[in-house]
Image (tube, rainbow, N blue to C red; front, top):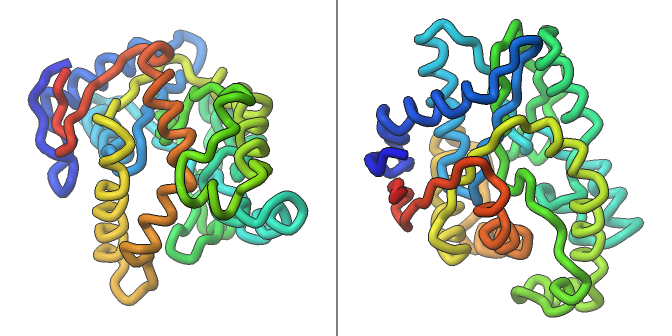
Length: 274
């Protein structure tokens, strides 16, 4: 990959890099159906920006690309509140494994790859609710599906790895390990069905989890700026929120370099290093 890119905040990746990613994505193309290309990166790494840049460039080349995010498939708030009552209170918070509608995700990708025009699920992060289906856009025909997410293809941890808490959230609010075991079990049992639908994948490898709080705060500020007058998280809330993702994020950093088809190293400013 070309080591030339702008930081993703505000400008996006450099055109030469986007071109290389599009070429790589098209390697997944199948003759009988649309293919699914996975772009994985930790929170704030620029995966959503990159996915939409690739789709825009593809459109200029006469190719139709549908971008999906794993965030589009969050369970709605009432379903997560039910999990919080029945399993563990931390499951009310969207995002970690076990809080997605995987049947909907798989069905949507299957329909797109089969050449069907389908409604594309959407989730409103500011209200923490799934947008009603009447507000979902229709896909139209697509040549390529891009699934972007922060933990695509990440494998589960062992029981030994799960035992020690990785942060204050796990230590203070999941002392018995119930929440993280539930998430880890879901990751190993339920998500491989979704991962199998990814034909080829790219991992945006940040320098470490330590950069995620700052990246996610920048992301929250961008979200708020695009939606003035609506309630967004404070910086303190963001710092707590990213702890929900720390364990699986560290697992991603440890395992995805050996799983993804292409690994792109980023520095702390989201600049491509290799």
